[in-house]
Length: 61
Image 1: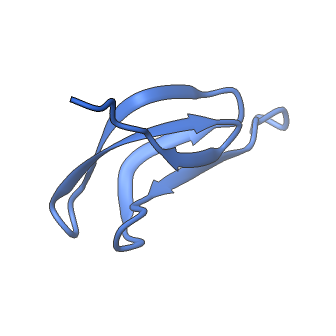
Image 2: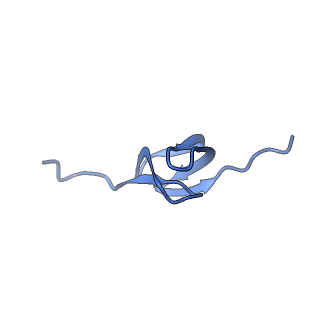
Image 3: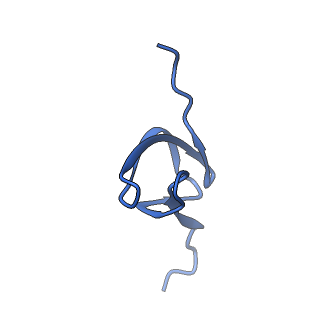
């Protein structure tokens, strides 16, 4: 067993709180990542840095 595992977590949907199929680690960086939730069937763009998830700001059209 690997004792040097980095912290990780499954991303939860910011809308319904359901678990998605995306896992991130402490050193994962996602920018404008298209996260799909199989529970509420919605797709959102998210940013993740150091296991902290925030919704991406959409540029004004």
